[in-house]
Image (cartoon, rainbow, N blue to C red):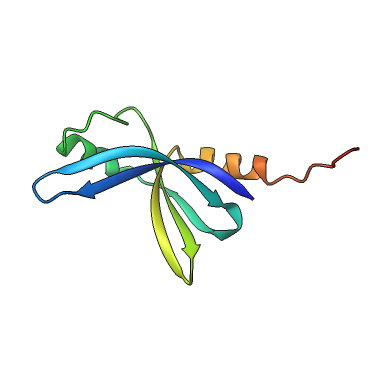
Length: 95
């Protein structure tokens, strides 16, 4: 089952870093762990990026092609976990 998350992208262009937020779809069956990630707030303040200052962030670890990728997602670990559980409930069709 795929679920939509908002991913924080940080790209390094040499002298500057660009911060953006993109939508991404993740397979719930491939998520290894979810943990709160508050250190990103300090990074955003240091980079003077005004996006996401009032947001909470989580670190998702996702198994992809035999390796674990880390994704910074918007939302607390509890919010993300509950949204993953809501979408993975089985629904009876035509019933």
